[in-house]
Length: 352
Image (cartoon, rainbow, N blue to C red; front, top):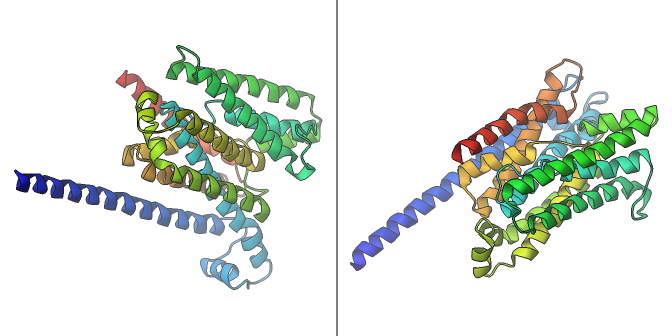
């Protein structure tokens, strides 16, 4: 009897180790793909620069003409910003889906992105500072506060008796329309210059990326990832119902508050610097879940990497579809994301 139990334990341990190895191998492949995409995004541009010249410009700061400036001050920060923003959106979608237990929830579908967009529009068009922050931080602060407002509204609605998962999504859709309409009103009263800036910004673009902007987004993504990962077992428990999660010692209310706060911050810094990018927060976690399940030790980092992968691929596509023209990256992610989103919806309908 004891030998049989030991044999079963050994088999289970081998299966677990094999599963861990597969997940680590998948992560390594994705990291390699991300590195290749960063190089590809640096390589593709209006100026022809060879791979050798790119490596020399990055590591030795040497090159012909404006090569060093083009590589280090324009293309490299844009390529890295695509990774940082994609990772942040993937993480935000991952955790919003976790606390709401809904695979089609995301900062975009719940109205958080449009709320952040409205906050940014108030700064760009009305020059309105909600909390009297310094002028360089005005747009970021406005975006964050309105993203937080939308998140709190969604959370408050989720606490109402009878508010099911579908009801929460519908409430988020209503918030989407509300903040989108408010943004359109601001666009209607804007002057031509502000309107052009707002429309261009709202479509999502990496073209105005600077090292300072990248460092801010990267810092927020890293801090949020660390906090999420340190609470990975609590977040994994949140995939159960609240009663079971609390029986495991998880303070579900505090975990939801943490996710709302950090997801709002991730959404705000992404929106205020490069504009609204939709669907990444839906498709990245959904694909990650198919590979690794709900275990946050793997679900979280894989969602971040897949989000970075989607945005990086979209950035490549935006530069090659029309020669000499860089399409807004938000349009490309929508073209990629809509078919996948519809697939998720139809698949969910079949399981009901």
